[in-house]
Amino acid sequence: MAEPSGSVRSFDDEALPHLDALYRVALRLTADPTQAEDLVQDTMLKAYRSWKQYRPGTNAKGWLLTILRNTFINDYRRRKHEPVAMDLEAVEPHALYRSIEDTDPEGTFFAQIVDAKVLGAIDALAPEFREVLALSDIEGMSYGEIAETLKIPVGTVKSRLFRARRQLQGVLYAHAVEMGYIKPRETAP
Amino acid sequence: MSRLDCEQALDHLQDYLKRELTPELVVEVRVHLERCRDCAGHARFVENFLVMLETKARRETCPKEVRARILAALRAEAREG
Image (tube, rainbow over all chains, first blue to last red):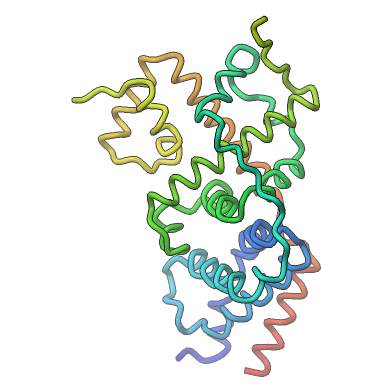
């Protein structure tokens, strides 16, 4: 086992750079800043204590996120009342693009939406949706890495992502219409 | 080589943009997008959405005081060994 100072140094070099990613994912999982802070701190302490189990040079971010997620499931999930998840399953998969292709085909209205609104919309997704969305589309993990971290099949990762993105697009589109960033498509008389 | 129709191409679109398709499917989707303006437009829309999502969400970082608190907890842990 490495002497303490060496182990502290490698922890600092390999684990600490992922603090922002851990904090973001913690926020998405808990949807509560205070809990997210505690969750990240608990995660980092657990990671530090079991640092000798980490193989240097392997996927530190994945290793840390696995600890974060297990800690969340074991210690946090029961604490909070989940927000009511939206269900837009009835929406046809590619319907959104059809409704904007004439007015804003490139979807530039997305850029006008403030960051906080986007984050709020992610947090209103069902927990299993916002989790895969955070790991894939925000933190850049591959489907394979996510499947391994969450212990679910790659096909499940893909289908959850597909539905999560579709729901998110729908909610952000509705917000953009409400704010006047985009005109709703005129319905035929 | 089999050719994708629009519905199949759109079904693969997100995985294509996330670089999660097999090399064979990547070629098939790319060929379809080069030939189909409608699907190419759809692809630009989805790509813009994914870029927007990542850009906006990643601007959120761990606040300084939270980082300091966590570092202090780690240092205390290291001292106690």
